[in-house]
Length: 250
Image (cartoon, rainbow, N blue to C red):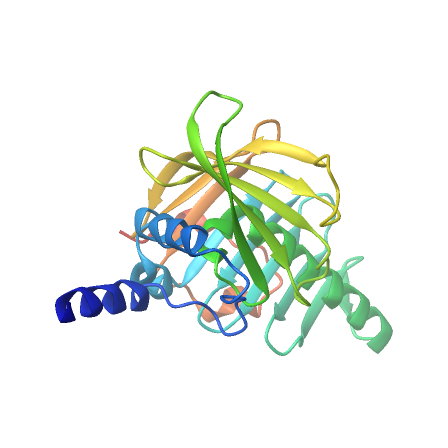
């Protein structure tokens, strides 16, 4: 009996919930599946050790995120706008219209937009690692097949007071044979019956020590890269970097 208790405790500690996760309101089975997803994505330790993640969001923006410091670079690919900010303190710099913007109102506006882009775009890339995030309530909805016929367990995510759109709801289909997120559905309101979209979450590839997926049906995330080291100038210099010159994580 003692051995069983220790084993259970060790399993729980392998993927501790973020402060503010609604464990009391979540289903034990949903939490268990979330932990299995984390293991199959590379494990919590490897996720925490992952530092720099870069990706291209639908061909509209390129983002580079330093998970350890909160520094983020957002390059708008449709114009010359670049936002360099820290998502933890909200401070940063903005380049637009061929110059650095210094007026407080302009800075506030574009830094807020930059953080909003990071919140949205990083969720499209890293949501499977965030199933036990602060403010999340997880429910188990039963079994179902994805649109491509894969047997899956279905989880529901709702939110309390976090992000820019806390009224959102998501359904996540987790593949049964190898627990990985295989499909997701977005609902603009938690009480909405019909989703705003249903898209696949496939084409997993190993980046460093973790798995990341870019396939979202008609909207893909591309140029996904993970780095262990990058020069600090990437987050201070408006000149857009060529990330291909740097060695990706192994």
